[in-house]
Length: 165
Image (cartoon, rainbow, N blue to C red):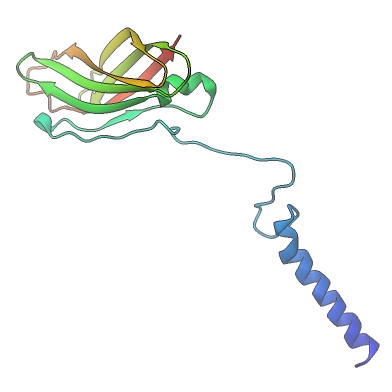
């Protein structure tokens, strides 16, 4: 083998290491997934996001807004268990569960909106829900139904605001 072939193989070997081996060490690479001292993350709803379906009177679905910041921890502690129209009381009702995984007791304030095909959004608010450390509590939230039908225009619930103190 002559020097030109050896040099070409050496250059080829360095190029292969530079393109493949460097990615694992936090360097360049071709896929923009380097980990050279910075990181990024994204969240679409946070870890507390939750969707539940319910068959009562055609009303279903629920979600909890939220992100990954500490200010949104109260939102991540909440799940929606039920979202329905109660024909007996003529109220829109939702059952939420608040799970406090922390080491401190908290009082929660929650605002929930009933949404759907109606142009009017119905809102229910509850305050001072005491949840002990490492415990959970279920609460019913209601608001009067102001429509003339069977409540089927409200198809989902969403916790839009929550705080804990």
